[in-house]
Image 1 (cartoon, rainbow, N blue to C red):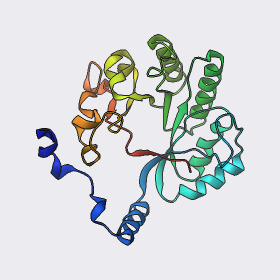
Image 2: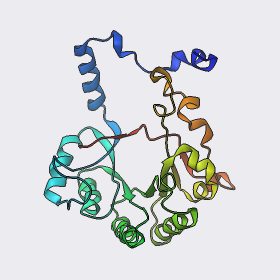
Image 3: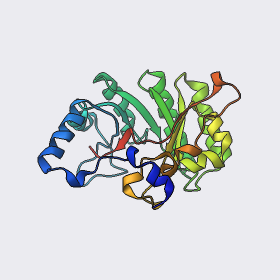
Image 4: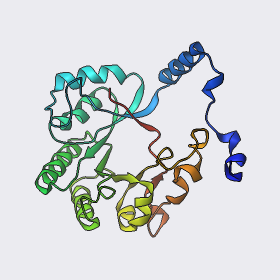
Length: 234
């Protein structure tokens, strides 16, 4: 074990090996009662997946499962019915991070962007996340991504973000500077970090993500990771 990990033991997560099933159930209930900050919301049911056209009735039914336990939801797309989610969620008192799915299908990207702009203009987006790991997948250039982000910025007054691995914000400082909010994934499992210490800044990469911009008034808010916006299929 490294000295860094030894120094950080007091900041580690809960050791569940010493807890009974009943105690863990109680802790989960307490967590849910106090509300999770947010969830990545997928309204698919068994047999569905990307390409399934979603309807508002199903979205409402799936939101019923989580709406009492979260403050935010995150979506990943603004097509195939996903563009209906933010209005329904806002109507239930939830805040929304509206996702714009980008890849190398430029025609579809245009539809995603236009639908996201419509959602934001209608007042149903608290943050618009333009792109998810598209630089990591090497499906768009930095210039292409920036052009999509600027389109949304120019057309709305909602904070605009990009989501990717933490190191991509170091590799692409112009993208970082263009973000009103920096949303950085960290991968302690894939990077071989022991589970007990995965929350540590050095382990999860957050120490390498800094606010960017020429002045404090113009700096985007740097979120070190998306652990507060947990992934879930609801």
